[in-house]
Amino acid sequence: MDNLTLFPARNLIRGAAFMLLVWAATTFGYMRAGWSFQDSIYMVTLTVFSVGYGEVRPINTLYLHVLTMATMIVGCTGMIFLTGGLIQFMTLNPLRQLLGGRRMNAEIAKLDNHVIVCGFGRIGIELTKALTDGRSAFVVVEKDDHRVSQARDAGYLCVQGDATSETVLEDAGISRARTLASVLPNDAANVFITLSARSLNPGIEIIARGDAVSTERKLIHAGANKVVLPTHIGAERIAEMILFPETSRFMRESPKMMELERTLRNLGLSIEVVVAPEHGALTGLSITDIEAQVTGAFFIVQINRRNGDTITDPDKATRIEGGDGVVTVGRSAEAINALFAAPREARAGRLKF
Image 1 (cartoon, rainbow, N blue to C red):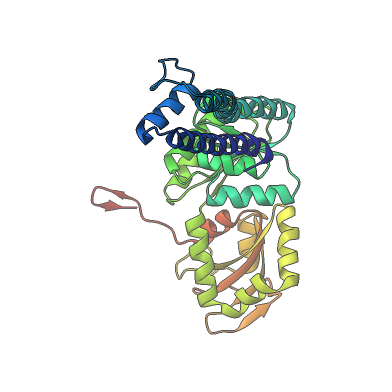
Image 2 (tube, rainbow, N blue to C red):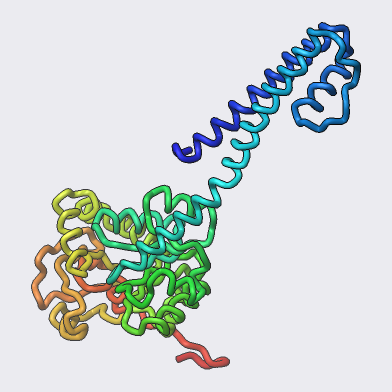
């Protein structure tokens, strides 16, 4: 709880504690004069709230006069303080949201060439951390109240709303943004966001997440420039660790290789280990033939043979065999995997193509 919220809450607690003390003390005072507990607490309640229904019993002694006047003065003052604290506590959060929302909208309006991150789930959180480390301006779009609070508590600019809404994307500055990353765990929503973003800003770069492999083509047709399949990438990493543990350990755990990977990433490149299938599109071809066929999409820097042999800086005449782990440097890991993949069968009734 921040200081702004703490003061009304503290005032409310203090006011309630003070009034409980007044109720207890004055009720005891009337009981001391011979009144029953029921009559005493009822008289205190009438006096504190200034209802004015009349005395429960005659106030005919100096002691009762002084006690009643003290109850009026102290009790009514305490109720005013308590009511003020309650009003502060109830109105502060909506007021803060209103003022904070206006201030945030003003800051978003100043942004240009920024990134829009749709979704603040597990991938969204890690993405925003990386963007913060890279000092890239960004806006988070999220509709869940709890996640919006998380994003704002982290100091991020955040627009609350459904990212599939064009109005919400406009509030996030879609017309001025350079990149939109749609990382929701819902493939249909990512496709719809991609369509909306492409129609609002034809020149924006769109990077979309897909869970199902079949979604990749839909996202590309919808206007995504790049598609990331976290499940597919994770499976490839595990397969890499199982099939080529030494190469994987060297590439993923070596400080020098990690630094090289960061440098390549800054240049828009990635280093990957791709397993060549037995009947893959590029299996059986020489490195010269492969690099000519892919027209510079990637370069082969190492080959891990299925029998355990490792060929570093392979000769251009070396041929790729089924089961080889091919270490590549290229622009798109997805494209590299697609090029090495075995041709897929298409069906039309009973016919296969």
